[in-house]
Image (cartoon, rainbow, N blue to C red; front, side, top):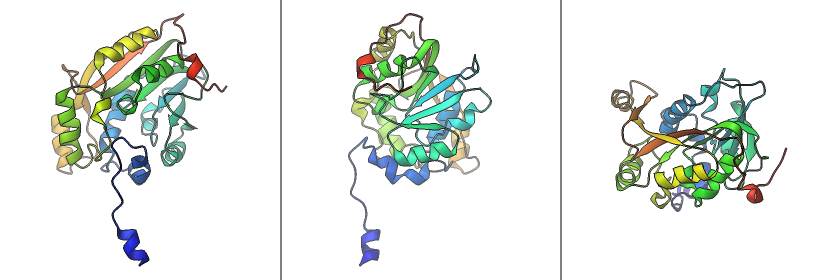
Length: 257
């Protein structure tokens, strides 16, 4: 009887349900697992992070997951703070040297201007309030600090590729991981960043085609992400926070030292 209960398929979750990350907790650090593409994106994201400009520099990693960014920051000189809602992911992030903070990216429990760099990797397409998420990311930045992000564009092409195709290819995207209604309008994102003092430059990226073919054939465990002309599917952004920009989200934050 117990065996039959354990073998029974679990009920499907709604799209974009955070509980999915608990179900897939053992997949974070498998290079050919369900989160394989997140490894490729973490490496690409880290290439946009400049070396620390001062001793004690802080990088805040919003939606850090299992801490996949950590190995790619080695030698850059940051104290790496990771913010996430998933307890199992944060436990794994700690094992990879991340100072884990349980919290929502819409109300980050960190004080204003704590970070030299804020990274928001593959998280903005999961939040119901883009403006507030951007405000929190910018609030955390010191004047002159750098915002680095990557996310999915709100286009028909992206919805077809990221949901219709990627969710059918093991390693590209687990089924149900995205709600395409939350995919990110590029103009709205850059405008929101500008309102919070960050002039964001964006560029498209995709997996290297030779790398992707080698990965699919089992000849390699990772794929390099390369720039492309279009931002209509997957794109990166980087910008700096200007001195004197207001902390518009201050009323929403739970501030800790």
